Image (cartoon, rainbow, N blue to C red):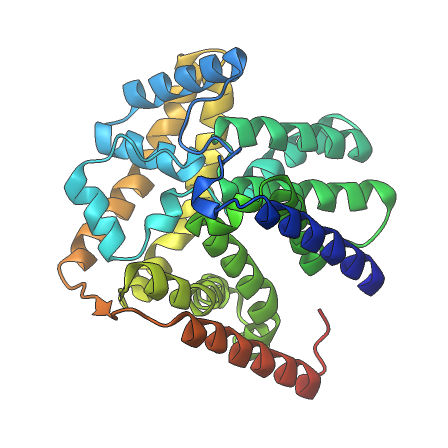
Length: 335
């Protein structure tokens, strides 16, 4: 595996060298992932429009916007004050399509198919479903990264091999950067990679400290926060400490909302009547989410930094990585 990683790294180094040798700046590169735009595939655009129409008819405006944000990463229909409250409480990542979306989508579809067909066929169909979902989510960088990792995991299942999360993350980074070196500049890509790496690396440590299943959301939140805070401070110069509390109170609602939203999306492609009951079931969770955000926003405050040096940011990650390796060795943890 080490030789394989070295081989990919050398190829990526050559790709980046050629990219720079042509006097390309990151800001000049044209992004190939159409973030925030409609899909160029007519059938995908029509399906997305039908889903949006069903959500808008079945739910109040803000709750429909939140459901579309959680399931597909849509951000265009939010009230400005509500959106700002989510930013101040540090929960905007929930409405940014992420790896959780891919995991939940693939998991729901695979679970349904596993009852109908053989496991091998279920894995193949789930992989195709991931590709369709990626298009519906407008090829967000985090979705593309998570989709590659999920398809690699399913491929490992088909081949009877064990999937390694860190290797899958590295391959996803390699494919995305090799295809579009300019993606390295995108904040969404940096946050997605950092959060995923943080969860993979910190979760084994926190599992030993917080063994109960009730701490699962806390472990995930803390892992992602440790890994992404320097990036947030570097680019935005602000960080809201109340985000840890906000995430603990709302993250448990995301899986059931995702499941109901995915099932409602599938049914809405056939008839809005069947999708409506699922939307009504999601409504109390969406209202709870909104109440928590607006309530905590009253007490939110932001820590501000000015011109955080990149050397300090990189130094933070080197220190954290060294600490992780030391703990792994001392506690006998294997990745």
